[in-house]
Image (cartoon, rainbow, N blue to C red; front, side, top):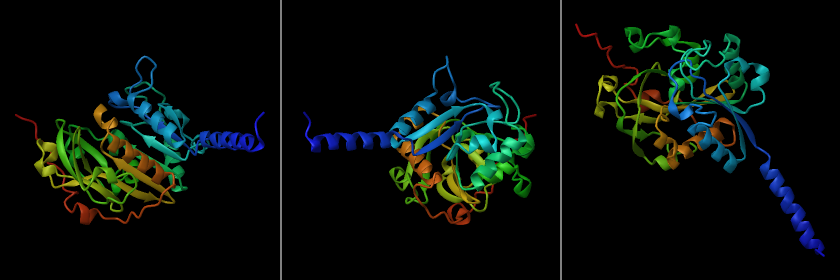
Length: 300
């Protein structure tokens, strides 16, 4: 027969395990591809994508519950109210069915996302989240793609804090860490060099807090013929929090513990579990960031 103390310990331990199993946050990982669909978020033979497997593992370690979806039609205030943060790995105009054939988001659904974050929730954009809702659906092959649109940029670009122009060949590139105190970024050190599909970005919001800056002048290809520019940042959106990193194309990036720690830090910050000072610092961190690569004129 169990002693009272042993029985009490068993009950308390059971209660503790039960409480630990209860998710602390529910997070939506949204991966609709109205444009190009990346392999790391592709559903193959009905199996979870590589990125989803990583989030499942992180969720089990941190008591986070993830919902994985490509269905844009679900976006509404009522649907989003169930989540503490939304993560985008998306492409194209999400209000069109596009490449993957998944249901499109309505304009009201797009606004619901903005209102969700402004009200105090979190948003994380990964890699191709910057290749989403392009201003006036600008053509990748046209000169408008290489221009800053400023106040005329799409509302999503203002929300995210920047927009994708184009990328060159995958290559190793050095990034300087601007704020080593931001949650999850310490393992990157003061600088890091990864082989990645590096995005050339534009139309940076003046209020972003730059976290990493890429050494574009040392890179090969016209997309990087420009001064250093941000590749990771954070910003406030009303009462809410927005985080973006351009990293996340390659499988080995997703399996990199430092990248996974960056994701954990981003989730903890966007859900409000940890605090961070994010004063605007674009001019100090990357003073030439608004200088874009020149549009490559077609060969005659």
